[in-house]
Amino acid sequence: MRRHAGGYLVHSDELDAVLQCPVRARLKKEGTSIFAGDRVDLDEVELTDNKERGSAVIAARLDRQNLLTRPYIANVDQVIIVQAIHQPEFNSLLCDRYLVHLQLELPAVRTFVCVNKCDLATDEEISALRNIYESAGHSMIALSAKTGLGMEELRRQLAGNRSVLTGPSGVGKSSILNVLNPELHLKVDVHEELLVGRHTTSASELYQVPADHGHEIGPGWIADTPGYSLDQLRHPEPAEVAWQFPELAQFAEECKFSDCLHLAEQNCNVLAHVERIPKSRYESYCTIVAEAQQERKFRQETSQKVDAGAVKYVGGEQGRGKAIPKLSNRHRAPSRRKEKQQLHDYDRAEDADLDDDE
Image 1 (cartoon, helix red, strand yellow):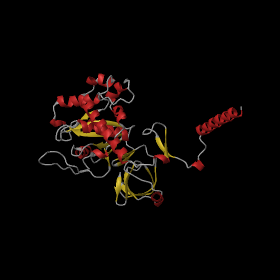
Image 2 (image 1 turned 180 degrees about the vertical axis):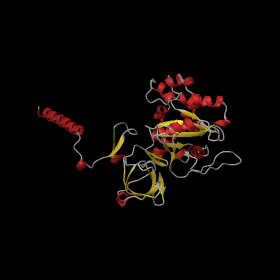
Image 3 (image 1 turned 90 degrees about the vertical axis):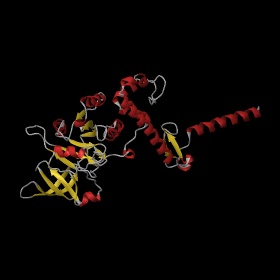
């Protein structure tokens, strides 16, 4: 569940108990990392009298399904991107940045959008956002942690899954968790003048979300995360950004240019159908491509310089190929091209000698 006092708090599904567990010294020597969400084997289990808490020793960490790196959370089934529709205002670019980042970070994990504070919005505003993201293949839940709108739908989505709440600071992630499990009493801070939430989450921890009474699926687990800054988001190569936007990718597949960025190229199939792509999503795409170009330029300028004479490029032209070190002459096999050239020169020399003899 989380790191705690030099060890870890571990929930045993078999015992339905929370155990405080140190790690075997062997795992420390091997450098085995353990994060919230990891599945572990336990030894030396001891329960208290009420059998709800106890202690044990972590003997092994089981194989991971995946790993989210900010913060470190293992074995994630789905990611919920939380945005407020007002206070603060919904930011399409920021939401799309999160979607691209998480699709790159956890490509096989379900990702959907959760719009909070819908008690402050009109039905038309909610419907417009739903049309944008559901047409792109992303599920959307409209809810309000204040009034309870949509909370049961979210609870059903969480049941039996390990989920991560992510999104910018102040959109109500901790408030949502408090509604899902009132026993948590997570700290919620509100800026009195701006009426927006402040950042209060600083560590990774899994919280149990009780299932509805009579629900066949068991409880879920959910983690809150701090907001990302721009430099912490993953940037794909510029030509790969289009594949992170499903509504744009369907037209990119038919584009006649394999390296097209779909920005201003003539006869581009995406630009020919750009009116069928939601305006906010295409604007986000253009911005993320520009950021990816800046990131690539920055990597190229700050990469370690190597002696061009000490390396050779294989697998493509210089800049695309992979640089590998050249072997010294005494370790290198003779070049077949050089051997053929030497043989050619020898034949020419022999011909010249024959002419002289004649």
